[in-house]
Length: 573
Image (cartoon, rainbow, N blue to C red; front, side, top):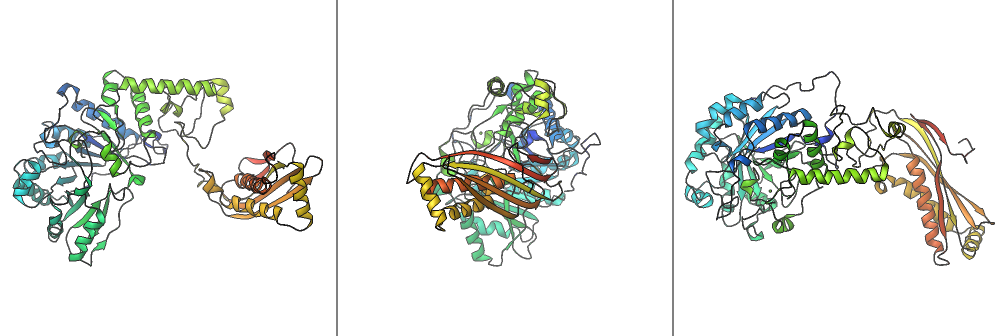
């Protein structure tokens, strides 16, 4: 299918950075939203729905088409470019074509995709394509009609195959076919699925069996990606690994000369959490930031209580900001309470967090921040702390403040983003310059320890040499020790020591130099600290009364902010 033309969805001439509301604390930018249109389905797949069925949400508590469009517009304005419609089974929703058509008209949405079981796809697809649907995923776990009926507890295999063929005829390329592989059920069909790609431009995606409420997941049914790959390579040793896009969930392969390709979604054995760019909206309006997490927040309640777009963004931003680095692993996931897959929307916690509960938590966070700092900036700190004053949703650094003495004269933490989360500062726009930093620290030793160090020094011993080497090594590893320090090439690091007989102290001065786009003061300070710790370590067997103190930056120069000299610093480097 043809891609939609790219749209210009930033309305003013200023180029804005990616929305902070959709960026989590690990820097992952979320530009892909999966929307479940319904909890209903015309199949009863064993890995998706418990045998006893599920209790469906009353219709009035599901998102209306107007609410779906409103949220789609809000997410698109913040940077979502791809929307996937899921279920349940999205084709059972009668207003599906109208929803696709309205989403297609939203500026910024470049891709509209749908995941379907394919049973009624052939009948609806021509009008869906006309409305703007341009990507198709079909779920199919077997090529044997009788087994299909066993797995899905319904008939319809031939209709699914007809839907796949119709998609190919209408120009969808590739048509993605999702196959959940389960040991003893369909792992014997892996080879036959690969053979389908010989003449058809389809992408068979083998999915590792995942635990959800009610699907009786157990490790005995689990078939890993590596095991599937071994099976396929036994038939096609020439199988070629293809290049994946940065946010692809599937590891792509192809048999040379075949029209289609295959892939593996390795959620359990090799998670791809580090590149996750997806958010999920359930049919009852809960935002879910991780497929396998059980935390949810209701955007439906927020809309229906009359909250403004700004307030909705605060909720979205807070949820995204709290997204974990990765899921808990398949054995831990299997023990967690989570929705059955059919209630998630494409693959959530039987009870979501209500909007009022979530807003209360934000209020508490705001009060705690005020207790600690006395004032709030007017802009993006409100992502976690619910203020209503917004300047413009894309600002990443505050430009104007109206309280607490202009927010302490516009001072701010550069390593903390607008929602209070840590971040690394982008220095790519800065010029490389020669930079120098000098730091100082002092180790006050017990008299007996001091005398031993002094004697060791006079005899050409190793105590201060070891301290110097430790400090230099520490400076080199600063970026590994301090989370948001940049890794820079050091042209010089050196430590000098001054002994004071009166105070039994050893002053350590570290000097660091570099040519880089960021300062070198952290390397100098790290050198002093590590050098002092090494000295302390060697002296602690003599006395526990040794003290490390007076760590400070004496001098820095070469950066855009100019030269800094501590009051005690008089030397010119």
